[in-house]
Image (cartoon, rainbow, N blue to C red):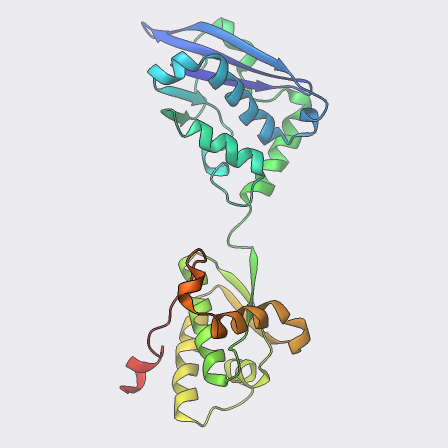
Amino acid sequence: MFLYLAVTEVEVSAVLVREQDKEQRPVFYVSKSLLPTETRYTSFEKLVLALIIASYKLRHYFESHTIHVVTNYPLKSLMRKPELSGRISKWSIHLSGYDIRYDPRMAIKSQALVDFVSDFIPTIQNLADKEILTLKGDKDAEVWQMHIDGASNQKGEYEALILGMQLTLDLGIKNLQVYNDSLLIVNHVNDEYVATDSKMTAYLKVAKELKQKFKDCKLKQVPRDQNVEADALATLGATFNPTELANIPIAHVLEPLIQKEDGS
């Protein structure tokens, strides 16, 4: 079964289609007039709303068939973005109970579907295209921020910095701006100070190797009063019993990150 979606300024629609003998034949058409609050939804949210309405009104088809949602809008990838609104998260959970596939729009094989050639009517297509660029973003151009505090000593500062850089690389982040209240650590990594202590030299080597793996990675020293969130988290991690934090994800550092470097 194939499902086509359409959005206007005041209405969302969907048509369910069955393909037989290489011909697409409409089975059901559903639509909903948007409430005043719904008219303020983004184009993406309206398109997902059309899919949600169809899943409720055509529930028996969704439960017994694979539904191919035919759209050129990147619904699947956008619904997986963690920063989207709460309603999208709820809708995504609801839709996960069905066997839904997302297919690019190909040639329309039915004259009855001419109104669904585009997901959006021409007057809102440009707005929808801009929303796509905003929602998808350019990961290679995005700059992420990381605040570091090592809870009282330079060794801790370096451990936090190295672990944070490793985690951001694992997330696929290309550009990173690090804020650290340790002037010594920042100037070490930025080659403004020379590390003389053997432990600090080993840590510095690891940090620089990780820094090279980013497209762009900058470190900046900030006053402690501008790094209060990182300071609070570092203090929390240093004082709380791990068994009391069962519901909070924690990354445990069981051995120094430079242990393999200096053989100790």
